[in-house]
Length: 228
Image (cartoon, rainbow, N blue to C red; front, side):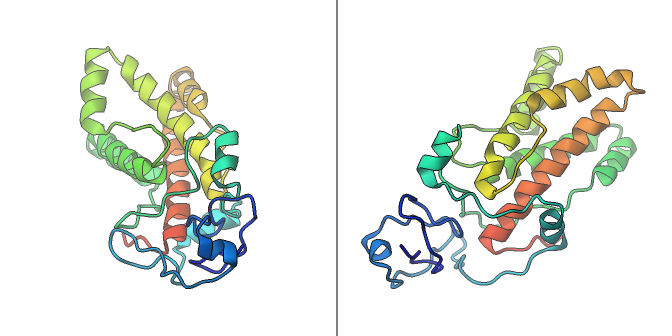
């Protein structure tokens, strides 16, 4: 079959195009024709247009994070333990793929810890976009603070565990693979405190790195570039 949106070849057993993510089960696709208008996002832009990669997107590909998009279709992703077809396509904005762990750390020190909650909220919002369709929702800053206070910090550990697993589980949708999961974050954030309190910084860097990688892959697939 030929994708009616971008013209790429689609495996016969795939329900989605491995390049642009458009459903490939239409009669036109099965016939190999391309007379369907390109997919339009919420902002009305055609995602089949050429895009210019940001430095972050190029960097992640050079480091091995940006391989070929997940090509297993809906069935393949479900078989791998996921709940959704390949990566979502419909955000009206480019996601921040240029967060710096050093900058987050410095601003966190300057603001006496306040900035990490702001960064946490932004990462949660972007994660809900890049991982959209997986039947999960990552709470933002308000819920994080309130529930952490009510549970004596237990919710903080739960939040780290959930977002670590969510980022790792959704990485294959973008052709990525993360070694770190929720357990990794818990070990660094708590047991890592014994290493001169460096563990929480490592956990922070893992979240920032993986969130950036998904955002960069998402922006590349959507054909948008983040403007800082």
